[in-house]
Image (cartoon, rainbow, N blue to C red; front, side, top):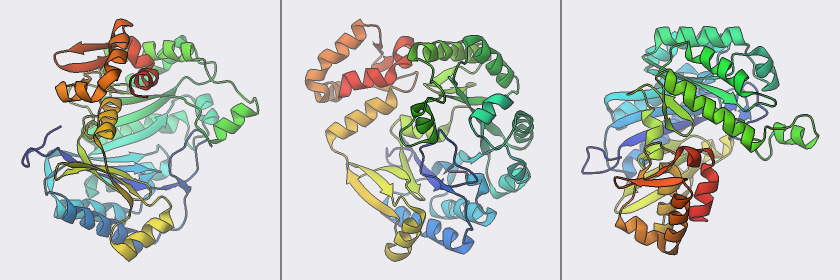
Length: 384
């Protein structure tokens, strides 16, 4: 994904806000129960961290700024505005730059939508997860279906771009159940939708619940059936998949997430945030301090919040290129250097192709429809 500055990749910024009103039982992100926030300290730290990265990399306008978490819609408005203004001062924004804020459909957050828009947010990502009250209770969400529907409608009336998340493959969910739920969701008219299969992650409350026999996850085959339903229904509604979990009307794809999947550059600030940057022929992988207090102290003491900065070797770059790029329905560009770097693993690639899981097309390597259902297994077979 090449930008306009001397052939450098396009550039975005990711800001991680680590606090939530509650911790969801399926979540394994770097999140913490909400606490009192020192607005001046957080604004100062994030601005200082951004400025440190701006001094290290070649200047180019930002194509995207993404506030993730956690629940960044609980961020004090002063911190949100300060970060947007800092990015404008340090890099500037390209035409049609995307500024995304993740939010939940609670009444407290709905009341702040106009403030978010005035601060410069032009894309809202709503953590709906479901419009069904029983499903929301199972997921331990702090909103109900009526609030979710109201949030989507209010967001569509206020923001140029709106997306929302849904979780599927809930225990005992049938293809018919999922088809009905998805058709209802698509009826709201959002131009982008993220559909995530429920997975039981290590260290989560759901992992402990499964261990105690409180519920059984769907089998892989049953989840694959629901994946098929998602492809059918979103394509029918004009929001086909462009990435394994993401669906959009033409032109409504997430610019920021495309940076991840297409090998673009992005600065990562905030506790535990990751970044990828290109410079001097090297590809850097950065990780910020994980714990909020350590992150704040690190920025205050040493300017940058980075805990690690690693130069990726050729093997790591190849693994990252394929594991991220093959998430896209359009696949990833493969050249002779990539083939050479695969070495003996080319035989594995040929077997995956013979099994109908991947295909070469016009210089690109794509996972087929069947391959996308088992993409993690495909990547493990190719790269491990």
